[in-house]
Length: 95
Image (cartoon, rainbow, N blue to C red; front, side):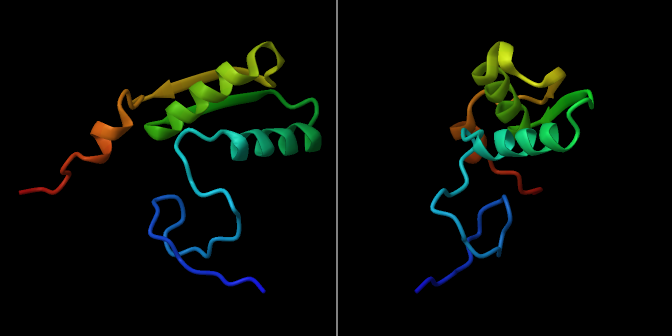
């Protein structure tokens, strides 16, 4: 029997957990699966990647992991987070 519960993570707050893999800013598996699906559905389509903030870290890691086998023709990363621990602990409240 499976039960579901909600998690307050940024990537889908309040969404039931349906996978044994929780969110990780360093996991490229979801992006890889999406790219494989898109490449299969549209084999001749030119693919380009754009990442912002934590997404830029994800895209950079994905590009490095895929190397010369990558399906992307180009990639652009903006606002790269250089230290996820420091960013996580920042106080963004307006005083």
